[in-house]
Length: 573
Image (tube, rainbow, N blue to C red):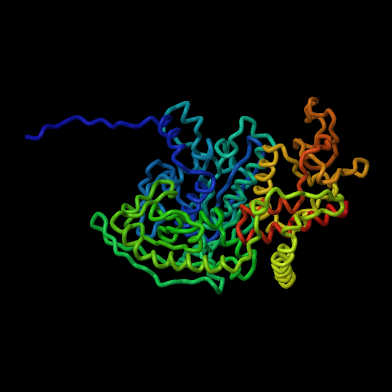
């Protein structure tokens, strides 16, 4: 005979659980992407993201022109583990994304929505972590329309849609004092990362490849353009036959659909810019492998899922692997939609059926490498003797001068012709020598490439030279005033460089001894006095050759152009 037992509801601690779930695995780009998923589910055709830096009052807004929600649906959406119904095409899964993503980045966040229901007015509720910590209760706070920020009311004034508004963004700024220039610069960098991530993750929606889901994304009113991992607009890209692998999991039948692509080698791209863009956010080596999509939304961008390892020779191989949400369990997708694993029952099939294509990609890369001239490094010469030279006539090592002229100059000429024909702008590195009160700006497409590719290599060489107590040319000496003439580049020792805001009162007194301060409307670079040294002197060409050792073939062109500009500047001084 069955016994009747009294049951009691056990409600978890709101304070403990919400604070624990803040560390579920989101970073800034993936948290924003989670909310874009919700906008797509709401049939939005435009999503506008705004990031405002105002110290501790900084905020982030994700707004869409979707169908909005009623009050009851909004409250359900803000409940942990919401009872929303997901279909086979849905991007949602656990009923946690809005809450976990928002709390992962902020302490206070609200949702305001407006639908075409009869009341047709803005409805808003707020989660406040400080309130939760005080009360230990699962309570959301209603927000009156007249208490909303003007930016929220303006967006929903004449249309339906939903706005998610993050405040107290402690996980984004991560500084004890967020009212600093350092915090502002960090937020700018994070916005750049966010743009790259959204352009990649939602590229199928942005390109109109998902039926009925064409959309546009804006970040601070600038439209985000899609990044196609497969460079399908390049004539030399090879699109191979689709592979279909049946899969059964938990009684549900589905399939993994693999679309193989082999990207062109560097010299087969239409332009250098196209090759650089195809490298992707993580660059060529890290972007090879599988791009895994769940209902056309990218979950994984590159990597071989432990089937094989990263290899320079296979970096042209990229595979789009698609699956439906009905077989989520087989791929073990996580809450943050950042991690996925290949089902064990089809791993061998995937490896076997993609192997021939990886081999073909390797052959294309290897054949292309054979046609690229290689400049021997300094290691091939025994103790090279660097002759003395005049400052206005920087020399090269005589052993490789002829080879540079024969092999590099034609490549530079070819690049120049491409640039001229396309009316593209060449990065004028001499802009570093302009006056502080009228600085020139590198074109955005070149500036980012310079920062990501050239500057890290320069810093690497600087570190090597500093460790060996060798002399590194301080190109910033070209920016000195006429009253403080430059010392020849080969007789300078790199000095410590400190950056301060252009407000004299903010410069520590201890740092103002023996320095030259130049007033400007932007942060001022303060240089210590240069000191002549007697250590071994290095030519620009020696530095260039050292950089080439760790550079990829396509990067050699950029290095040559940069150093050519530096030579011209040195000769002028």
